[in-house]
Amino acid sequence: MGKYLIKRILQMIPVMLIITLIIFILLNVAGDPTVNMLPLDATEAEREALRTAMGLNRPLPVQYLDFLGKAIRGDFGDSYRFNQPALELAMQRMPMSIQLAGAALLFAVVLAIPLGILSAQFSNSPFDLVISGISVLGRAMPSFWVGIMLILLLAVKFRLFPVSGSGTPAHLVLPALTLSIQNAAQIIPLIRSNMLSIMHEDYIRTARSKGLKEWAVICIHAFKNALVPVVTIIALEIPGLIGGALITETVFAWPGLGQFLIQAIGNRDMSVVQVCIFLIAVITLVANLIADVVYCFIDPRIRYE
Image 1: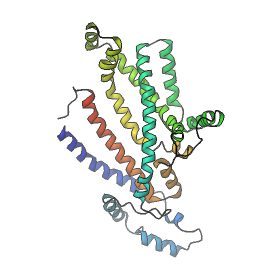
Image 2 (image 1 turned 180 degrees about the vertical axis):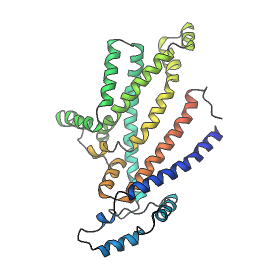
Image 3 (image 1 turned 30 degrees about the horizontal axis):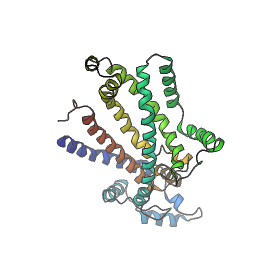
Image 4 (image 1 turned 135 degrees about the vertical axis):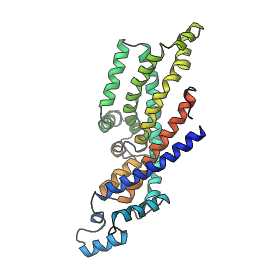
């Protein structure tokens, strides 16, 4: 396991280099950042002076190497809008995104696991058909539309939760519920299909022949072995949850990393955009690494040499 972890961590280095290159190229083809930094009546001489001060008049390879060297030291430049280090501003938003992602993941898992197990236990029944239909519908509905509907129903009509903002646990419910619906809709059919295939395995029949109760067979023997693909899905969803699904944070005015990234793109605040995308990429790699480690604890048959 130790050798495998070291190998995976080393593999992350070239991936991160490629990510920084892609970020740099995409942001440089987006246009001249001095357009937003200076007033509309600024002269070309003033714009050229700003480009020189920012190093934008140098060849692109030189600019990239300079960007890479600073990024390794944690320096992604200053936000021109806030005049503060971009990494510091992004890290200030990170706890809010982690809070939202954790709540959304908790809602999704608590909702999906029992429904997936019950759907497998009562396969091809009316209950199974209803749950399957809800899963398809949940994956088809855009998150921003779900968020608006939840606001109209639970915030405006019944006044159960605040419309937007943050500060109390009640503010967290609607955005977390919005993010959890699509995730739960993806996990439910996955649990159902894995449970159906596992329930016909020999070790399940052996457990039943020993006189174990059905709930013990399902929860202890079957469900544990059905978790491996579920962990994979959860690991792939974590970066999107940390980013707040971008639009969801904007709909609910949740002050997280996703809303911050959307605002930075609108303002062409290059430093902030770079650091936000970089952080989400790092979270993606770390989440996949953690998922690989968790596999070993879920299924002892999985070993990494």
